[in-house]
Each structure stands twice: as structure tokens, then as C-alpha cells.
Image (cartoon, rainbow, N blue to C red; front, top):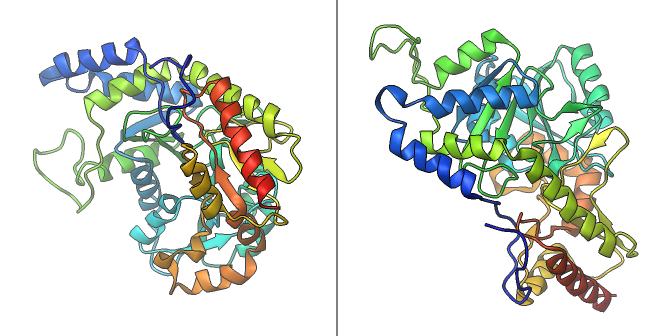
Amino acid sequence: MGVKGVDVVERIPVAGPWITQKEIDYVTDAVTNAWYGKANMYHGRFESAFADYVGREYAIALPSCTSALHLSLASLGLESGDEVIVPEITWIASAAPVTYVGAMPVFADIDTESWCLSAQRLEESVSPRTKALIVVGLYGNMPDMDAILDIAQHYGISVIEDAAQAIGSEHKGRKAGSFGLSSAFSFHGSKTLTTGEGGMLVTDDENVYRRCLFLRDHGRQPGHKVFWNIEVAYKYKMSSMQAALGLAQLERVEELVERKRQIFAWYQESLGDVEGIVLNQEAPGVKNTYWMVTAIVDARFSIGKAELISVMSEKGIDCRPFFHPLSSLPAYADLPQARIARSRNLNAYDIAPRGINLPSALNMTEERVRHVCDRMKAIVADSR
């Protein structure tokens, strides 16, 4: 799919990929040849290239980022009563694996500028039961990793990085996915780099790598007796066609990241100086890849995110809501930690009701961005 010359009268999607002939050729080759003795030919290439890109020793291709987080937590041997801190604002996939392994999620508040985990709120959330922390690169941004890693080291907390939304992002020259014990990526169809569905686990720890390989293949030791399962484990594998698509996308990753940053620049030009609208921030030393261009509307306007999304949809423009605080979700309604978070995490509860994700698909053009911005400015102005 190209990225130029799209008529703005068509409905504008909120997310979507950029596929070229390279991807089509690689997937065609995989579906034609990646069988029998060559069944894993693209897995190995994709995993090796991805580890090199991120700056990690090991990589495991998986069906989702959720499975990567699950395996990362499972490799720690967590027990009932153990706590894992997660940021209040993120998709539930960052937190759900905590429940999978029998631990308790603890929701910590966000920073008002990065919208990522606040280092101060992280430290306030630590207890003697805290065993791990999942840090999220929200919408392509990155938090204060230096402060977060210092706190984790001080308290002996394992750090798992959820870089699902942040491929190509950087903190002081280090790429998202290169921090902590292990990191997880998503290749969902909405992501900057896609395999349709899919994910990747990366780590520098050989023990974690070996344990996750074992757990993702029904608890079988590589090279051991056939069909001989040592533990009850999981089936988490990626198809060769997905791996081929991922490899082709990875070979274009800088082009994809630059397109995301260009899309944000167009939005910044149109909305950056509009009073009452705040877009994604980029702190000194951080490279934000703007997976989702996001707008926070000032509370003085009488329009919330649900109404704004609805009116934009009537104009043929698809948007998404800023993530709801995890502790506000029915899934966590009865969790004691959620009840605490609902009164403690003031930043998340202030920002979330006022934010929307604007169309950020890789087929966006400058013309389309101007069209979206014009409509949004008019809607917001009418809500004064």
C-alpha cells in the first residue's frame, strides 16, 4: 500500500500498516518454501535480526505481546501474594498476565507529560511483596528509565519492559526493548511493525531465554525424548508466514518509524499552537515514535472523549479513546488494589477522560492530517 494521494473524502482509519512488494514477496516465499526441513527458515532470520536491532542477545518470536509478558513473568517463578506494579494507563494486556501467573497487579500513577509510569508514584507503590515491575512505552513514548531502573535496583525488583507500542523509540540512545530483564513487543495489525498478529520476547539473560523457550513449547526440553512433557506449559508460536512478514517489515523499520514521526510533525504543525489541546510530548534524550498521535483536550471545554470520538466519526474520521485507567475497568472492579488506585492515581483519572487517539495509520498524508485537524478544531471550538 502506498502512502500518497489518498482522497480525504474517504473514511479515515485510526490505524493500519504500510505493506510493499517486499512483504508480499517474503510471505509468498514462506508459504511456498517454509515447510519440511525449512519450516523455521524465517523464524531464525527474524529473531536474529530483531535481537540485533533492539540490542539484545536473544529473541523469541511469539503469537502476541501478551504471551511474551506471560512467559517473562512465568520465568520469574512468582507465587500467590506476590505483587507486580503496572502503570495505571495502558492496555489490559500489560496487566492481565500478572493474573495468569497468580500474582497481584498494583496500579501506579502516570507522569503528566509522558503519560508513562511516574517514577515517584512507582516508589510509593512498592511493598515488601513487590517482585516485579512492568514498564510501558505508551503510544511510542518512554518514561524516565534512569529513575525507574534505580528504584527497581534499590528494592530488588525485576523489570519487564512492555515495548508493544514503542518499536524504534529511544531513551538516551538505547532503544525501547533493551531495558530490564526482558522486553515484549507487539506486531498487531495496528502497530508500526506488523505481522498481522504476533509478538517478540527479547532478553540478555540466557536462563530466562531457555526457560521461556521451554514454557512456550508445552514444557518440552529441546532435543529431549519426543512428546515427553516435563511440565504443563503453553503453546506460544508464530507461523512462518508471520515471521516472513515481520522480517520484511523489520528491514524497513527505519522507514516506518520515520513515517510515524512525519505524521506527528504534520499534526504538530496544525494543532501544536491550539490553546486547550495538548499533543504527545518528547522529553530531552527521548525519541518518541508516536505510534498513536494523541490529543488531550482541556477540561474547560464541555466535550469528553466519548462525545468527541462520536462527532469525529460522523465526519468520517475514526479515533480511539485514550486508555481507561485499569483500575476503572469492570475486570478489576473487586480487586483491593484497584479500589486503592481509584482514589490515589489522580493524574490518570484527570487525563484519561479527556484524551483521544487521532488517525495515525501509515497511509496518512499531510492532506488527510489537515482534514482531521480542521474538523477537530471546529468541534472543540463549538464546545466552549
